[in-house]
Image (cartoon, rainbow, N blue to C red; front, side):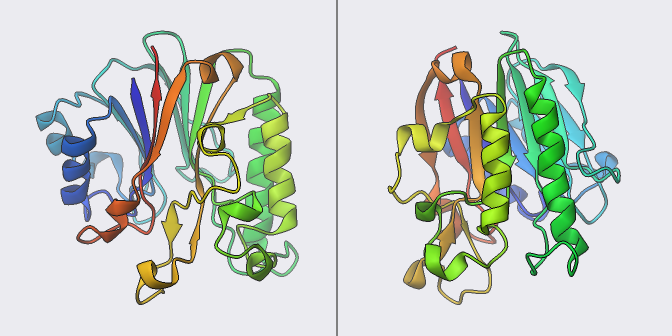
Length: 260
């Protein structure tokens, strides 16, 4: 089974490259973040035309939004409010084999890494803490994937030194994500297959006039699994070429192949 995560940054605006990716990579399940569309306007028809008949969505006008589209049946969906303000940032399902799949869009956190000066940064840290509280009580095989908006390792960013005070790579964010990871012994599948310091970026800013030239990337997108599920993982891919497609997202898809 091939499972993909992709922050698409508006699914309607970029439906063309979504269709292209599905034809080329042929995943079984696609988890999308930042869909930026209410449920009633989600473009389901293009997905169904490609065989993705199972569509679960948690949308929001203009901002946020997550979705899971699949060629295999999905059941028991849930929507956790880890932001505590009803933003559409999570959707979870159960796969036919009983494994849970949780798709999450962690807040970016604004520009200033100080919760007193920047409430958005505090909201981000609180969001990750709520995830950690949930994770500590988790007692079923689970895959946790999405845009975590944190690059935890020095090799997860183009310059560890330059980004230590930049939101997404600050020590306090990294420590928060480390606590989440330790709360259930999660396996970071990207780093399982590509151990640090291998380059494994998944995001490049739109602000760069030529993202390929300076290559100032960060690994913000992740796929984690609980222990037994991680043993079934066979390969992991980062589709960097998608960043150069027409009307690209600033994120690229990541995919893990599982032997189930």
